[in-house]
Length: 81
Image (cartoon, rainbow, N blue to C red; front, side, top):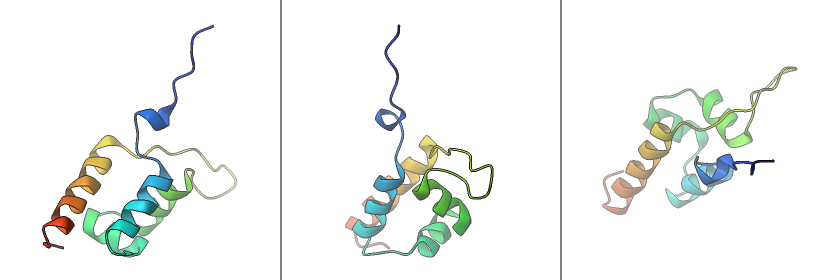
């Protein structure tokens, strides 16, 4: 049997996104959504790890969103946001 690949090794997790918001000065989900040009519900889905509703499907934070979050963090460190 092959080894199971852990997605958390490759992708940002919801917990990491929550920590990022804290590192950005305690940003709300709304603020992060605005800065990333996304909906608040999508940020909530990412942090929760699944969509809401009866069919709650797992969600993975895409790499481009992770990179955008890293760019926001770098801008914060430079005092730009």
